[in-house]
Image 1: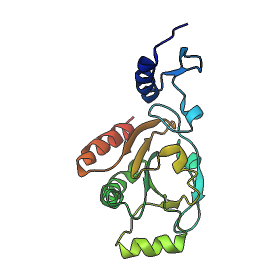
Image 2 (image 1 turned 90 degrees about the vertical axis):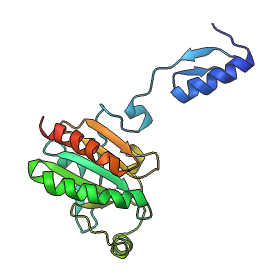
Image 3 (image 1 turned 30 degrees about the vertical axis):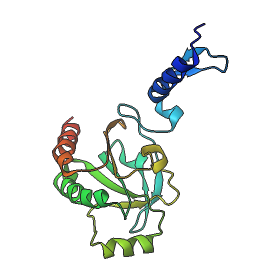
Length: 189
């Protein structure tokens, strides 16, 4: 059993807690902990399986991720109407969807504002937003809970086998070639 003086213990806890690699029992014993799996944390990770979700589409109908995975490469975009970078990312996603949907790409915007279809449609019209790809309402945040840390935009690439291949939090135009290269690589597999 390893015991550490409190000043060292506090420093270690700060570093270890941030890395998620150890825990300290009340009596001061430091115990290594295996990194949690995505299923334990409830969050997706690159190289791990996707989390399934279903939800209503903005223009009617329902979307099921499980029905898309296996047939298509899926690019999810979690976004909010008041998020400037989210609105900028629409240009990239529209372009990618138009360029690659015939090669098996599905882009799905997942709105995290908690708005109903009427309010979201009005807000999108006020901002001149009309994506060519489908938009799903995540009013209860059930999908976002597995894919985001409550920050948007988050873009997630899922291959045809259902493996999360890339996750990008935030958006800058400099990411455009990175995301497109990742996408093309997955489409060509």
